[in-house]
Length: 258
Image 1 (cartoon, rainbow, N blue to C red):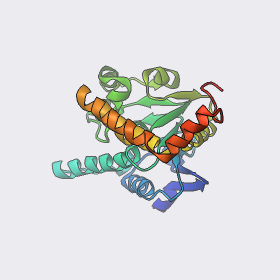
Image 2: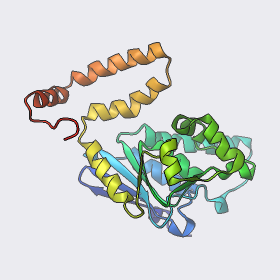
Image 3: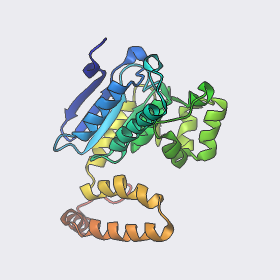
Image 4: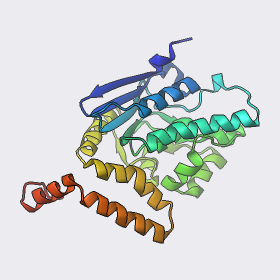
């Protein structure tokens, strides 16, 4: 059996962490060992890192769960396995740094669940999305039923599972599966560009976007508005926010569109 530690490559470039799934011979299918490596990486982000890029070796981002290692589980074991996926992907979504996913080829099943936990998704033209669980007599278990309806709507996710529909990169961007579509082989450069731009934000702003905005969206209007007021007050009271506002008023900061 190959060394599981080789299935994930991690490289720090100044304030940026590049995390690469490295099982191209398996279309970057996800097994438990690889999933737990992702958890370790996103739980132990090095000091000084402000953003991360999640990408993959080979022509595919991830073809989903590695079915060759799938084992029969009783109800309790199956529940714990699903909850393990939830724990790991929550660590990506609600971790310490924003994560930009660079997608290409297959972004299927568990691979799509991982992508949906990231904050920005850049899709190369070769990208295609699918949820084959519906055709295999099973149900998603890695968080797709919570995250994907917020991205594309319940009816579109249901369509993917009912019919086995495969979504192209161009369809995916207007549906909400990605925010950007680029030419093949340009995804990593675009992902790094966006990650570097995000790293320039005030840390409190990025924290609010990662941890507070999703909770506002899940709240009632009155609760959401209260959380917004509290977060706005905290953010604007920081020293960095005050310095940035002074720079803007003094003409030292770029205006929108410049």
